[in-house]
Every structure is written in C-alpha cells, then in structure tokens.
Image (cartoon, rainbow, N blue to C red; front, top):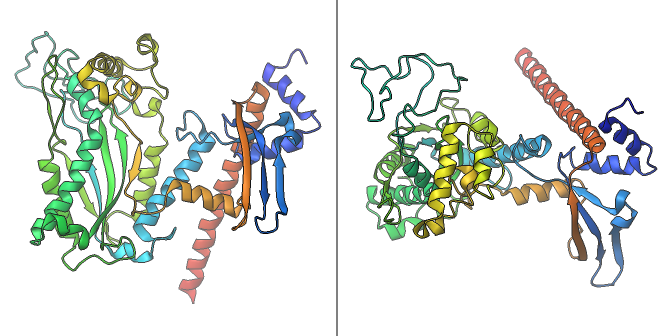
Length: 459
C-alpha cells in the first residue's frame, strides 16, 4: 500500500466502504462532475388535499450524509463533464430556434434567418498568421523605435500571433472600454435593425412590434488578439413570436440590408473621464452576413448550432481571454498564466476600474475577462427554449420532478464541493465511460441512418 500513490490508496479506501455502491450511483448521476457541490438536507412531498406524505428524502441515509450535484461549469478547462452537457444544451437551444423543437414550431426554418458575425475594431496592428504578416516596402519604425511592419510568415499556433507589433502604441484603454460596452453596442445594433426594417416599409418605428419580431441567439468569441467577436443567429417572426408568420415584406434580403445599415451606424460614447476623455465606440469594419436557407444551400443549420455551442464551453486558456477565475487583488494579474498582451489588458482593467467615472462598468470585477461583461451566450426571450427548461425536461425524463398538484418542503444547506484524490480518479473514469458510451451511440445512429438510406435507395 505504501508504494501506491495517494490517489490510489484513497480510491481503495472508498471502494471498501459499505456505501460505495450508493456513492458511485451519485457520481454517475452527476455525469462524473469534476467539482460536485455537496448538499445536506431533506425534501418532503405531500398531497395538499389529503395530507398524505408521498415522498421523503433525507441525506442522513447517504454516504457522508450528503448529496452530490453537478457544478454546471460551462468551461471545459474546469469541468469537462459539465462542459459537455452545457454544450449539448446550447446546441439544442440554438438548433430549436433554427428548425423547431422544444416548443418551437418547425415553420421557423422557413423564416428569414441570418448567421452574422460582428467584429471589434482595430486597436493597433497585431501579428497575423497565414501569408506574410504585415509587409511594408518602406520599412520604418514607430515613435517607440519598433518596426511598423513584419515580413515573417507565422503559423496559426505561433505565440506571436495576436500580439501587438508595438505594445506601447496599442490602445489598451480603448480595447478594454470597447469590451465593457459590447453589450450596449449589441443592444443598439438590434434596435437599429428594427428601426431600419420599419423605415424601409414606411412604418413608424413605434409600430414595428405590431407587425414583426426580431429574435436572436448570440455568442461571444475571443480572437487571437484577445478582442471579442460576436456570432449570432437572427430570425424574423410575426408579432406573436415563433408561432406567428412575419409580414410579406419581411424577407431575408430586407433583413440583410437592415443588418448592414445598423452595423455601420451604431455608435456608443463612453463616460467622460479627465484621464481618458470620451471615446466613440463602433463595430469593426469586417461584417459577415450569411442567409440560412432551407433548400440545402448556404450554411447547414446543425453546423451553425454546433459552431455556436463550441465557443460556449471554451476556457480562458483556449481563447486567450484572461483567466477562468476572478482577479481579487492586483498582484493576481502578475502571477496569472497569460501572455504579456493579455496581462496588459488585465492591468488596464484594474487601472481604469479605480476611476470613479468608470465605477458602473465594474472593470476590476471583470478584469479576468478583459472587461467583457455578462454571459458568453445570450438570446432573446422568444428565440427558443431556455437552459432552465432543458434542465427541467431532463429531470422529468429521469423521474426527478414531483407530480403536479403536490406540495413540497425542501430544507437544504451547502456543505462543500469537490472530490478527494481517490474520488476524483474514480469520477474521471466514470466521465470517460459515459463519454465513450455517447460516442458509440452516435456512431451506431450514423450507421443505422446509412443503412436506412441504402434500403430506401434499393426500394
């Protein structure tokens, strides 16, 4: 035993526990969550009409007198099992808004639908991958003595890609403040789309909700230069939402024109600061708008949903977006495992966050995301289902919901989180087994679909 690792010795100890089987059931129920939440308490369900107790559950009968539940962290770098579940939920949420399902009618796939990408503006030249980075015939240097160009050819994975040619020339202040106002830029953009749609058909802007409704789901993606780009699915419905057809004038071409016009005109001003002044913030000049057709041309609906779901689960280490955890003190920035460009952005957040005029932006609280605030994925209310609804459906399928018309008294308290070394080893094995089972199931479905297609062709 002494020659075994601490994790192996702990795993053997757990396996010898009389309640090991029940503990393993809990681990399986969490999908092998890497950092489960520990709860202690009880739930009693009864029939209000008769007073009969229908179900009573108490953690005093559980191993360690606690119940394990998922941490639900979306980042694959923090908890791969919960990240996979979150990615799956995101895929189905976005897909339902494209082709129907989850209480969304299938007729939405015939609506005007666009897949758009809005970019951040330039805050200074950075090294690029692909062809020659930034060739300049005349050479030259900036005021800090650094070359204005770069004739090298960088690989996509080269550490230099995304780094400024001159960090002293790079506008870190504007970069951080643009991130802090990205949500407002998006809000102004969607309002602008509605306004342009209304004016293009001679409607007063206030009457647009009586004729049509704009629905969307968007995700933020950090580029190599640590600036956020926004990918979004935009759909035009009737005034009642997904179940209502848009007016005859609501075409994909008209929606495309409104998107282009709004992206070019959106303008947001930062609060005035004696140290910085007032900045005018806009979207970048690069705008990609792709109509989503239901005739097989253009981007595939499932591919778009998978593309968006992929970015929801990426951690900071994959995207260059700071860190996965909040910065509590300034010295945390100095020890963060990030490159010099990201560290400079985090320091700019901390420095600007100390100015009273920027207090509402809470830049220090969001320094770990380089000033970008809010959720990575957001959607309009009428686009499709919610994460809560998807979780409720999953609980109902597993028989975890109480019958309708019953009352419940739940008393729970938090008692900790995480695994011991041995428990983490076992949980990782459970998570891998479940992932392998899902992969085999997907491959079997593909094989069945191919066989079915072949039989159909022979018939």
